[in-house]
Image (cartoon, rainbow over all chains, first blue to last red):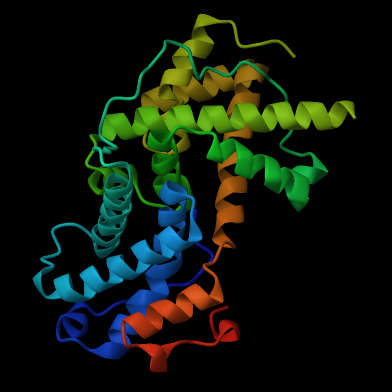
Length: 198
Length: 90
């Protein structure tokens, strides 16, 4: 899958030299995904805006020391995720971690409903009602699954990059991704079954 | 339609992640595709999983931060002179 927004190639050398137009291009490339990631974790526009600003301030200050051991994308998203988690930590006064084990129950996310809704007109035109159901389903996912789905399937990171951003093993990413995908598929299947009955 | 019941189907589920991501060994891929040809339920699960992912992906690509948030960001970073107009970002 490709993102619909075309990103301008970033010149790291110019960025490290503090070239403002290059920083502006970087902001233009990454600000929407960073905002989406922050919203995904925090569910608050104000908090997401705070994280967005903190992330890019850290990027501006840290870019001279960025060694390129991970991709620029991975580095920026990791800063964003950490900023969002720190905000939650400050609010709740406790530790929040995305690398804790997800409780697994055998077969928990196994597909139950089998209904072929791929070619339903509604799945093509994306009605407001379907959009609402999709929002509800993803909001109901456990946070640890939701962020993995967001990074891999919405922001197009690879499994390896997603693991790097979240500090997880690739195997843990795959497990969580499968559970997230199956859960969302199940919810949409229920929705299409219900709408076919009406 | 009936729920997935066969052992083969459970086996498929274990490989489905790699299959969807195109990161699967050729021989496992062949076995899986052979199973999919003969099992309508699994085929439906794979198709609807793919569709689920594409629906969320396409939907999220349209989610942009509010204009005021963008402006605050550019101002905070002292980049306001580079703030593109909304019609320039298509």
